[in-house]
Length: 413
Length: 114
Image (cartoon, rainbow over all chains, first blue to last red; front, side):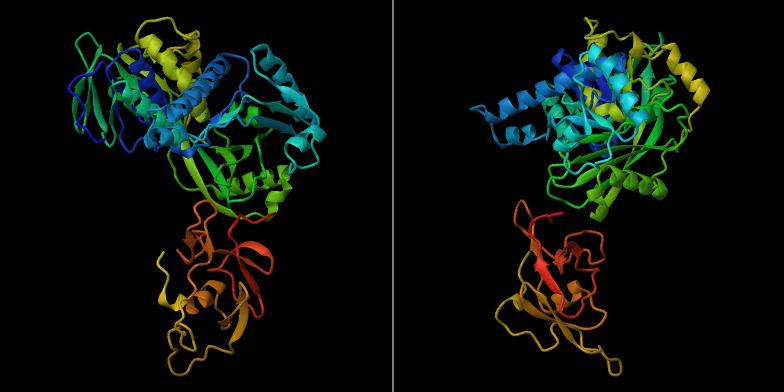
């Protein structure tokens, strides 16, 4: 796997997480010779630190919801393609392993314990339905049938059958494998040390610890570290790390069938004061039997120390929603960093100043869910073909991005 | 995991695999608890995991998917490999749970019911 990077490529993707994988896959599908360079191991950063959410339920009407709906469809198609490949007459053990990405259309349940929360999800669902999201209002009794261990004290709930879950590391491996089959080369443990530009300002190549690659297209999919990568090319990108923590219980018999969210989940992601620590409860079972309890949001740079009071709040809220959890052991916690974008939209497209430098970053906590559509959109912009959706709202030079960055000035490590 | 000879028919020494104490301090009065129906000797202050290890028992459970054996791994409460049911209470870490007289310790091969 640790091949020396090629001397030339049509495009170099920087970042071996799910977003880089999907960009490389889409670019390869468009016929480009792609090299993926990753500083550490593949799919080992933010991609490995999340819950594998593929959600439409937490998106307000707008460009992110469009991206989420397209991505949701692409994830389903990928899952079907992998399953078909696994049972094909020519299939081998590697095909079966690649198909096992734990993609599950388990659905989500947004639960409200207050009238205010119930009003909020009801209003949101009206908007979402207009965009094609399936959002079914259900009462407390129906919610109890779907999730028998939920607290009886609910006002109401909204059921989102389209919400899916995937094991993000396995999914990245499957996407990278497909990209490789289309001719892409993978270069883990290959840190980028520079991005070169010609006299006309255009990008001309990428310098790595393991050699230089000449290319006219550089895709910055470095997530949390994309600001530093952009700076290597002389570009400024207002991306900051936003820390998140997750609790993991001991393995249990199936207690939580769907993804269950607190009704205030939507409000917290786009909270007015982004620098304030916040939690938004997401509780779900995994195939291994553990229950994941997420998650927190903090702008504290790249500090890897746990915030114990915040973990305690997450556990307390989870026990309010699922009283059965009060008697359950926690095995561990983990944390990671999301690439935070000041106006809460990813950045997908060519840099406003540096020609040939494309960004695919800033997905915050939605990177797994949004990655396939991000790859499709990015590839269409690189190859100047018809984009699958309007790229303007994701443009790197959009006014809202830089205005919001100037207002918030998030802490950068 | 290779089974130790002590799991076999050879009779363990009277004090199990415990290191003999130096002259002077005493272990206190031995007592017993039950592990899957078998009488296990323990001394005050020992954990269930320690007493089972002294009795030569290394296999505390098997994994729920592959059925492979598990026992004391980290021994300090971190790995959750040594889970047992103690007096009906599931998922107790043998390495941290003190042995008490007449406790009923059971193998837990499936995730506990709640």
